[in-house]
Length: 279
Image (cartoon, rainbow, N blue to C red):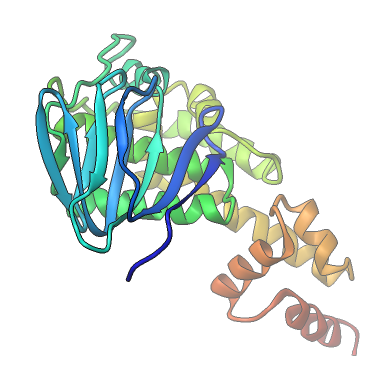
């Protein structure tokens, strides 16, 4: 599986932009350096040897690498064919936003003592994030995924972690956010906006929205967009224009969700529904 050294960087559509990288290295030997943000990465193949926190560590396939902001570290191959990994670089401010939300305004920015962890659930979450970054998914979906991953890291692997209790009697508050999504489904709505509308923390908003409505906020947003799309298609609006009007970032994204929900493409649905409506 030998590959040439390369690294592709992208900016995720979440929390004012989070840098992510998809990298493959064979000969690369990183000198000691620091980042202003955290490094959170999953080894996809091979193995990496790196120095961090006064010691040397080896991360093999499916391991998660954790480097705190301003930790001195380096990196090189620990396998004959090098190593490949996908990583993100959230800033302390990103974690601060999550921690103050989790702990009612208290700043509990995490410190990760372990340099390499084995956490299959978290690795799956990270891979899902990276795949959604590649297709430029909606802001609400990206922020929800990042939030869940950051929360899991903080609660399971940082040196200070307690689980917040649920808030009771929040259904009426959640209905306000639901009505906002119904009215502005095509907009690029943020997780923070919806939590503020409902008067809940982002943590409680995500958990309790799904509890009451049986769909995560971003999944509900997709369903509302699809309802609007069906109406426009029946009116004869071109599929490409429907994708734009309903908030999908391109035709491919629209077709993917439409077929996944309805089992047919937008164009086929339009032809069939027009025939039924006007024959």
